[in-house]
Image 1 (cartoon, rainbow, N blue to C red):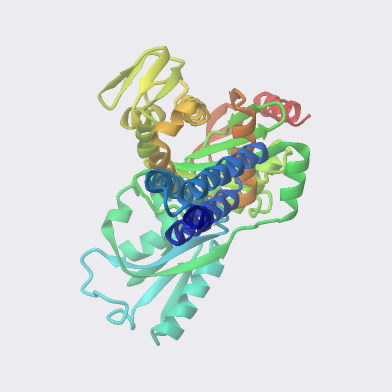
Image 2: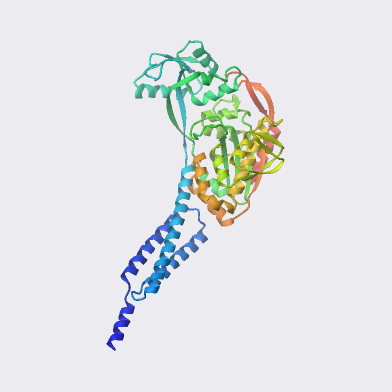
Length: 485
């Protein structure tokens, strides 16, 4: 009788190792669920189900390991716990990668201007200290705030006071250096691209050398009130600024080769993409009504590009995406390629594209969206092709197939794009897509115009521009209004 009683008492005791292991599993379960919740991308119903499954798994492990005398059950409990710890580790890795990637591309509200101190390529000076007695040419009005700040920083940081001579425009500035009127020039690095648009001056950037550069940080206009409005109206209007150059530094101010408005209606699952030609001759928001090429707006900051397009289309732009199209190669390859609709049969960079649907890898897609000489409409068709590539990326990214290369896509996106969309807003879009699993309809439209020779605000000399076709601008306005209504 006494032996049986002892056995019963022993059977009711808890296993100390089992309790310790169960406690460890409970802590890791809570940590995993907190991490999952913190990403803010998992829909509430899925989050509830995930919590129930995780705590049920912990309870099963606890039941299996709580008795000290039942070794087989105890071993099964340990194996069960190891399986779940592996699942938590793998799941936690993906959740951590997701949160880091989204955080890496969101909330970017600063950009930089590189103000360079240049001399002729064969000048003996190798440092700014060597050129402390030089006379430098500067622009009288254009970008003057940045020039003055760079000179001030040279004075404070390098203890050098440079003498300067003012010039009206970039042509006078380059001529002064070439003809020996000045020993050097001080110029925003972004302005060097303008010389490629001026006959006989295309090689000037190759004839000079930077002695030093000052990286000036600028805050991008970031109005918090747009968050609430965009969410409440279910419509988010985003400016997509892109460059198809080979530069990889996103935060620097520079010309924008791609100017696309993406209007997302999260209720109707409609996306309207409006492409505006880079040479569109429109007043910039800072030019006092003087027209300039739209691409030049990027020199003065992405907020100037946004404000200029807002004025053109009578629309409020909530956020921006800045994209390096070279980085798109990695995203498209990570997605396993994309399908792109081509309007024409053409060849570019050794690849042939057929009219209709084309399956493209990253390198092929970049060649597709860069080509303009093969088309009668030139840059207009290039803009349409760029939208086709963006549409292909969106369609693939919104499909379940993205899960196969999820982390690779995230890492690629983090390296080639940035946005001021708040993390919560971007996570909310992802969360809604996971919840609805909806198909999106994408409408693409390009405005057009007529080529002409004009004097842009940023150049003070004639250059090729495109005079807007007001009918196409009005139609673009209509498409945007319909999507918001």
